[in-house]
Amino acid sequence: MNHECNATGEDIGVHSLLSSLPNSLNCSTAITVLGAAAEALVPAMQKGNETARNFHIALNAINVVLFLWQIPTGIDMVLKVFEFTKWP
Image (cartoon, rainbow, N blue to C red; front, side, top):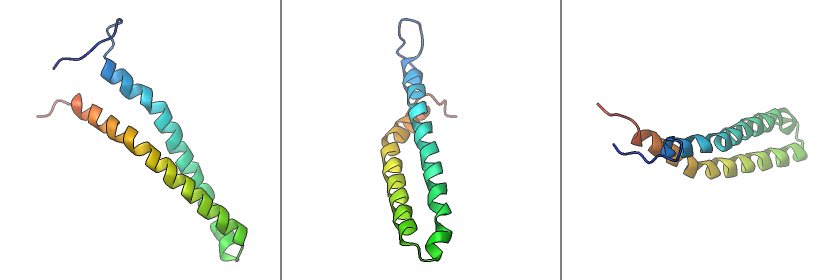
């Protein structure tokens, strides 16, 4: 299998995979925090608090957008892992 390398001999494919990880991890952290915040609003919603309901919906909408934003990066990462995997 031929791999492209830069001037330092580092594999470019692995470098591009690793460079996308911090962005993906930050996004995943945000999704987790927003999900917890949305869940924390449930008791207030059960008491009929309309503001809590609106924030709950907004937080979950942001979560969906962040998740959709991660899909292309995630697919690229999976394909890159498959590319460098030695299958039996």
